[in-house]
Each structure stands twice: as C-alpha cells, then as structure tokens.
Amino acid sequence: MTYKTPDNLPLLSNPLGIDQGIQSLQIELSENLQWLEYSFGRAYLGKDRQQTGRDYIYPAVYKGDANYYDASPNDNVISQSFFVLDGDYRYSDYVINNQNLFEVPISLIIWGNLKKISGVDEHFGQILLQQVLSVINNNEQFTVQSIVDNEPDVFSEFSDRLENSSLYYYPYFCYRIKMTLSSGEECKETIDNTLEIYDIWNNS
Image (cartoon, rainbow, N blue to C red; front, side):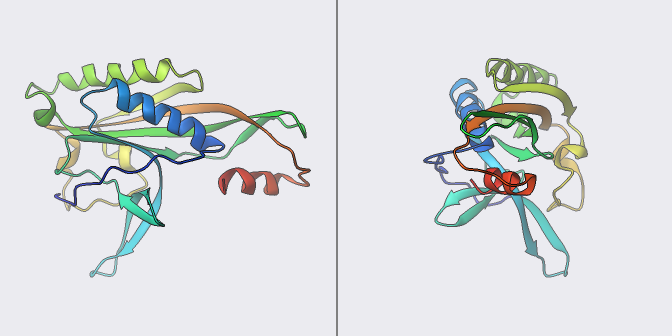
C-alpha cells in the first residue's frame, strides 16, 4: 500500500458549477485541519488495466497538464481527502438570465493513519470526524446527510490495491461524509432541453 507521494496539486483557476462549491470547501478543510496533509478537489473514476487482466478503478484527481493523480489510500501520506459526485443534479429553479439554483449529492472521503497524526488510540478518530463536520457546517453551501464511518463502503466505487481490507482498520481511519451541495449560477443562453443543461454543468 505504498504509492507515489503526491505533488502539490493546483487549484482550478476558474471553477464553475459544482466545482466552485467543492473548491471552496476544499480550501476551508486545508486551512482549518492541521492534521489533513492533502485536501484534494473533485475525483473522477480512473481506470487502469492490470497485468491480471482486471480493471483497477481509482479516484483520479486532476493535477494539471491533462494528467491525474491516484488518490487511493497511500502510506506515503499522513492523511488525505477528496470529493466524489454521488448522483444527478436536481434543479429547483431555472430561468434564463436569472440565478438558477440546483442541488447535487456529493461525498467527502477522508483517509489517514492515526499513528502518523497523533500516536493515540483509535478513539481519536471520532475527534477528527467532529473537526471535519465543524468545518463543513460553517460552509452554507453544504448540508450533511449521513456518514459512513470506517467501513469498506467508504470506497465502494473504487478497487483496492490490496487483497485484504487492512486499510479500513486501526491505525487507519476513513470516513465518507454524504452531503448535499446547494448552489446556483446565472445562465445567459437559451437552453432547449434538460440534457443540454446537464452537459453544460458537467463540462464546466
């Protein structure tokens, strides 16, 4: 479970749509959680074909120049976090040349090594979780819906590089915090159908 240490990944220069909301919370997590070594932005599904012929699915975080970093659990880091999109956009208001409001389900996934953070026992993980929730609650765009705590389901859509599940248990910790992001943007173009709306937000 030892992978390449990540570089300092760049922030998006002009985030739009959900990326704007994600980046705002990404920055707040980095600034307020001293123990969080790497606060990444939105992760996409990356896929590599292994020598065994199986596809390895991983969280791919953009790192510039059309390249992506694998944000899987990594013993070269103390702790890290990234965001994943959990479902479709829900539009509550859509008016041309007006502020158009939408909601989207998003998860924040956090993984780390307690021994590298503090050296205390596994109960310290709950203290860290409460600190994360405090940062989220101060961001008006996000509302916490539920939490998956220290279970394999935290990484449900990704493959493991290990044959065992040791990365889910002490001294490692992981959370999946399921949230709703509420945001809006001004639309200045005439949109003919819902599919085109979806494409505009997701290609931004």
